[in-house]
Image 1 (cartoon, rainbow, N blue to C red):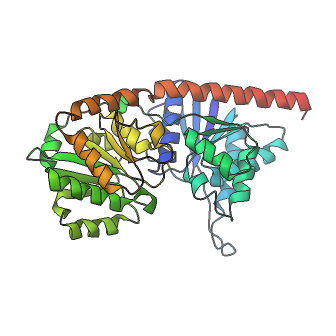
Image 2 (spheres, rainbow, N blue to C red):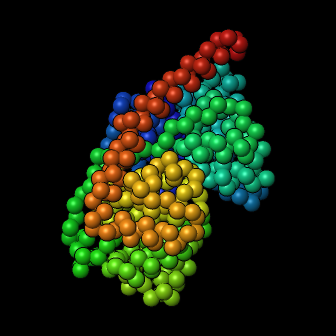
Amino acid sequence: MKIGIVCYPTFGGSGVVATELGKALAKEGHSIHFITYSQPSRLDFLSENLFYHEVDFHSYPLFEYPPYELALASKMVSVVKDEKLDLLHVHYAIPHASAAYMAKQILKTEGIYIPVVTTLHGTDITLVGKDASYEPVVTFSINQSDGVTAVSEDLRKETYASFRITNDIEVIPNFIDLEKFKKQKKDHFKKAICPNGEALVVHISNFRKVKRIGDVMSVFYNIQQEIPAKLLMIGDGPERAKAEKQARELGIHDNVRFLGKLEAVEEVLSVADLFLMPSEKESFGLAALEAMACEVPVISSNTGGLPELNVQGITGFLSNVGDVEDMTRKALFILDKNNLPAFKANALKRAKEFDISRILPLYESYYERVIKRVAGSVQLTGL
């Protein structure tokens, strides 16, 4: 198949999933064409089946903001025509699904019927989509897609509850490339961070309010009151300065390192003992899955899609949002040397259920069904 993938080219979950999916599809022999405004952060061109098409858009005095959606739709049209694509797979509802609808209508005028699959990742539904300014467009774009997937059952339910959706939504969970995240023993790195054998706790996010970075600091403060421990904070965002200030105020700043954005997070996770994800909302929890793939148990909130990933008492524990004391107790239980090995083994075992080798066929099968259905509809209506 020749597939166009439209995504945000950033470190965020939807961009990472879209890029890794495209790379995996290319390895299987599919021709994959990325369409976005800059090269995705995890995209390399070691495969002859990977292509990148940059969306070029300009500022004009007439426009207060550059019309990216129009430029994106135009680029989709040209790539579909020039590369003879079989399907467009857009990640994130706004503006990708709405731009795809526009591109589809333009192509129809030339007798080209391109199926569009939209994957919902979370904030496009739980945050942006619920904004009254965007809700009608989100609803329309989802309903006009030829196929719709969501990364968790919770996100699927929330989409139906929040919007007037008439389309069927298929749940295809996020995934991990276990080969990439296979535990890499970097004892020299662990020794540099934890020279006296301290427990190593890690948090990865985009440091937005929804991630509850303050709770990460509070839980870690409680942990290191009981046992020697270090905390690595990976990522960046608007809450970072506040978190650094909180660390200083709690007197734990010397035991906390802010590493900023890292691409090879597996190198850090490979030596970690515990992963903290106290988020107010997570549609799936991709960072938690990456940790589990590195044999790192997870302390998370029990919201959104996290209960579908983190198994209570097996791969880690789940607590109510904001319950710092409960998270602390459970974290200390996991970090007990008598308990940690079993949790680590269980985390990896669970991560194997989300290996790309299991999830990729679900996407391939779904693409084929959508393409067949659209082709049948075109023949039936005589369009």
